[in-house]
Image (cartoon, rainbow, N blue to C red; front, side, top):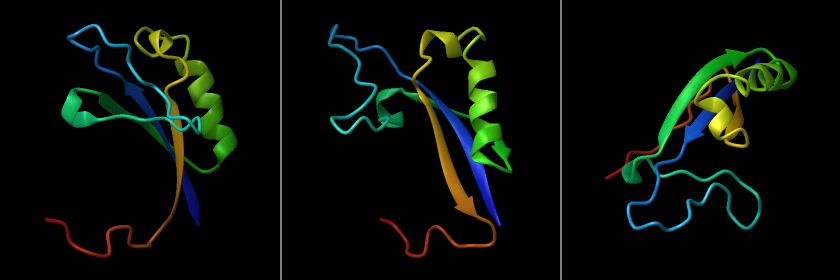
Length: 88
């Protein structure tokens, strides 16, 4: 079974006035928690359409409406390992 996680990224503002990068050259959403970007999980949904509907509703809410294009939907298969190797 596949589920869909809806995330929102609130990007930290640059202290030196540089523009904040929201998407890369390919249009993919980018974030860096070490730089202060705040990643929020809005919910886990049974379909991409339900996750997209929730994102549309969230765009009207304070905070989310300041960065309406910073939603990300990731799909995951239940009972499947995602981290198969360690890290160091």
